[in-house]
Length: 251
Ligand SMILES: Nc1ncnc2c1ncn2[C@@H]1O[C@H](COP(=O)(O)OP(=O)(O)O)[C@@H](O)[C@H]1O
Ligand SMILES: [Mg+2]
Image 1 (cartoon, rainbow, N blue to C red):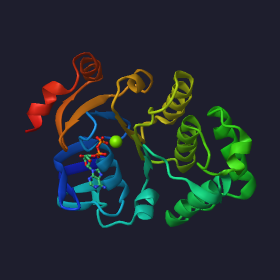
Image 2 (cartoon, helix red, strand yellow; image 1 turned 180 degrees about the vertical axis):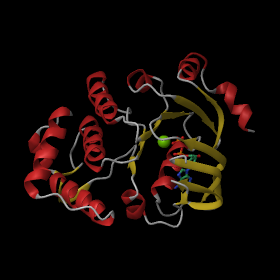
Image 3 (cartoon, rainbow, N blue to C red; image 1 turned 90 degrees about the vertical axis):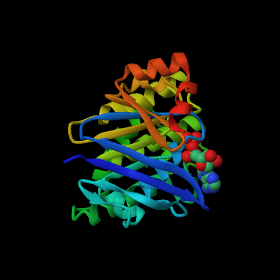
Image 4 (cartoon, rainbow, N blue to C red; image 1 turned 30 degrees about the horizontal axis):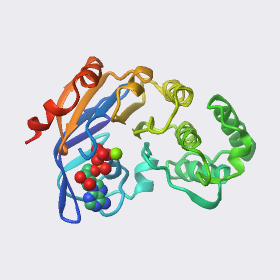
């Protein structure tokens, strides 16, 4: 059974149609990339998968392990193994990053009927993961994302992903605002988590990220639909020729 199946998904925001019959199937163990021009609906897809309010699904379905997730609350989806790294990570003033991680990870484990981590076990795990991502341990004492640089926010997202051990991780423009060194750290963080049991959906406007996180499948999105699917060479073709040729395909 496929890990994720999106069937004929139609989504509106405030009566405006954003996704128009999107189909996408992801098998476990694979990395899929979605590329597309700004405004094509990439972030909307990520938000709908996460279960963000205000997005109305008017048609179609999203199945995780063959079960629809559309009626599940965001935390329930997370407990089922869905993880989203957002284009614009949210700041949570007054909540230390370490506290946030421990509370969230333990809440998910509890929902899955797994035991909570003991404090020493958790600290050890976080510190090891943070070190690999070149995150200063002092950063973990600071409020979630508050005053973090763009690169620090993205690394913090990958730290969250590492701790959550998701089955499907969706990364929305994780490369935006990163210099090449930070891009490498973030990509290595993702690549370390690649496994036969886990899949990734990497959303990006640029091909650059895909030099570091090499996808198995590349999709082109235009006007709320997937208009072309291919191998990793499709990303190179897009970089060379641009998206213009696909704009009409979506009409
Ligand atoms: N909250 C919103 N209200 C109204 N329109 C929105 C909202 N969010 C996104 N849109 C519109 O939906 C379209 C797709 O946006 P988005 O999913 O952010 O695209 P992408 O991530 O591919 O750049 C755009 O035309 C955008 O203006
Ligand atoms: Mg976007």
